[in-house]
Amino acid sequence: MSVLAVISVIALLIFVHELGHFLAARLQGIHVNRFSIGFGPILWKFQGSRTEYALRALPLGGFVGFPMDEDSDTSFAPDDPNLLQNRPVMDRAIVMSAGVIANLLFAYLVFVIQFTSVGVPQDFIPEPGVLIPQVMSNTSPAAQAGIKAGDIILSVENQPLNQGEENVQVLIDAIQTSPNQPVDLLIQRGKQELNLTVTPDISPEGKPIIGVQLYPNGRFSYERSANPIEVLTFAADEFQNVFVRTAEGFFELATNFSETSDQVSSPVRIVEQGSTMADANIISLFPFTALISVNLAIINILPLPALDGGQLAFLLVEALLGKPLPRRIQESVMQTGLLLFLCLGSMLIVRDISRLEIFQNVFQ
Image (cartoon, rainbow, N blue to C red; front, side, top):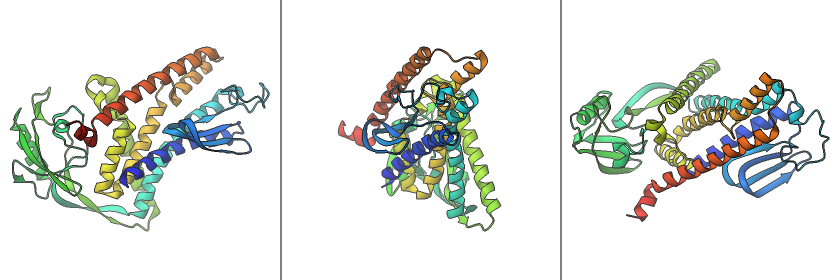
């Protein structure tokens, strides 16, 4: 059920993104002839009075289609003022950026719903063990040992890690005193307990590391708030934290790609990590949804071909030159970018499928 829940979350976020484009166009009176979730063969469609709505076989994205873009709709005159390409640059920029804005607003709304329904966090209740919220790389010692995000380390070298923040330092000390030596860990994963052995590597700074983040294990107590301002404030703070951390992650990826590229995930890995989090605590679906929504927004605003940011870059060039680039050049750039993204996406999917535990067990 957790896998289906995560897939549903991703589909919802794609819908939100495309709905942003759709509403931004419709509210300006711009013609829209297609609204599609997914790519490839059509599984279901409905022809409205002005727009065809469809679900397609590959749920890895979606698109909003405009007349004349596909040269398949001849019901409008070429100079129709409500065709997208005939609108001023600012009108088109609003349409192109609306998907990103919709994802950011939705992420904030998710936190509002979380703090309204679950309550605002109060006291932190410590529990035994040390939580691993993130494995930094699939090539890290932790990943190679089989450690996953969401795991809880219950003991190190047969020494129990009890409640409290001091256990994080106990674990760090055990790792840093064992450079290139195996360290035995007792891991809790959902309802399972696993014995794993990890061998720390030496970092560029000369310290033994295993390549994970470490947090004290525990949970917050929640209390429903009757003050809507408190809920909105908590949601704003949490949204800001997620947005800043995500933006910093993308900046680090861009400036240090050779060492951080392994952190780029395909939908397969996202579903796996999300389902692991949901298995541990269903409430974690709220921050997971917000995090993926923010990631989707930032990815799409990047000035790369086949993304919204690429379209906005073309509009910026048009605004500076006073005329658009030749349509043939734009189409060539976008098609090349789309092909590269499809190739990269396929490589990431194959890589992440090969790393799934069930896949590895088959070939052991």
